[in-house]
Length: 173
Image 1 (cartoon, rainbow, N blue to C red):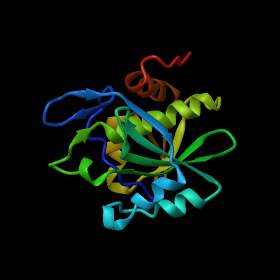
Image 2 (cartoon, one colour):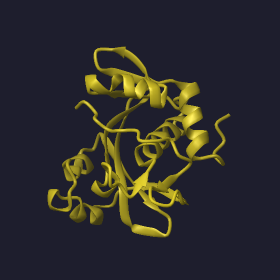
Image 3 (cartoon, rainbow, N blue to C red):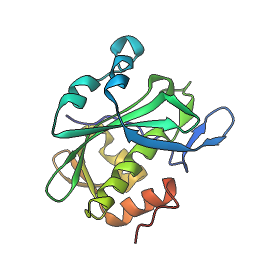
Image 4 (spheres, one colour):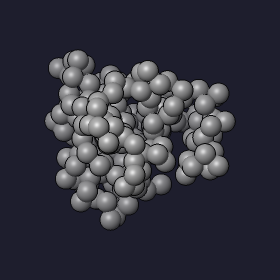
């Protein structure tokens, strides 16, 4: 699957668009109970139940610490032999478009995957397949490098910069 997510802004957490207020977030594993909320009826575009049930993937949700019952975004990751692959990523519908509630959601989730990669000893590097029209966007916003076809990689230096931005207390050295 080719990813089609927008990095609206690299914030230090997620920020309420109307006020600029920053909120502390957590990225935690998705639970089976969460799946009943992740439907097309509730404006989720992808089949997260399928991602969740795929034993090769790990699915995580981004939440605001004080609002743990509201999912801000989702990310699915595949652990390979020496890197992590970003399988799928989606902002909640209320965090999309001109009337979005929070900005920085996708950047937060990408930074989390880089942090997870670092914790596995993969230097923070992650790989993903981008839609062609977004390759330049990911190069500019994430420092990702186009490595052929539609594959992109975020190398160690850029990964650590993303981690430091979103998770300043996390030791990257």
